[in-house]
Length: 203
Image (cartoon, rainbow, N blue to C red):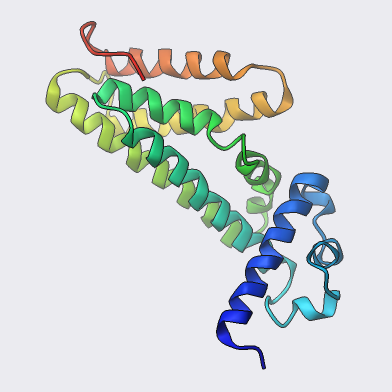
């Protein structure tokens, strides 16, 4: 029996293979056989490390969500004022997952949530984490007087996440540019928060 650390290493290798296949072939082509081939093993051997394809995909989505949130958190941490942090969160939330294909993977498997409750939970967990980031930024901005929200903070946070969810698809499809998307979401955010004219807008 493999040592525990060897088992963990093989699980990570399988998830890396699943990520590679998902980016190359999309959700429809992400099969157990394709993942096993990319990992350099037999399909039957995968069952020693995972219960099946659904478990692999769920783990992949959760791991991708973690990386995506880490990207947003890191971007926000480099900004100084609430307005700068707001813009950083929007920029990272809209484009931060594109370079490493995190956004593509999340969108590829989004529809699985319609039939798989655990996948739906993964999607909502990611949204809640993004909303929490926006809540913190807005709370700081209200305290400094930079933000004067026109509607409830939670409603603004959820609206911004929903806009990102919808418009990133346009970036992936090539119907909108990154700049168009981030400019639009920033405009909506600033209108809903009635951003003070004197607030810094540098990122």
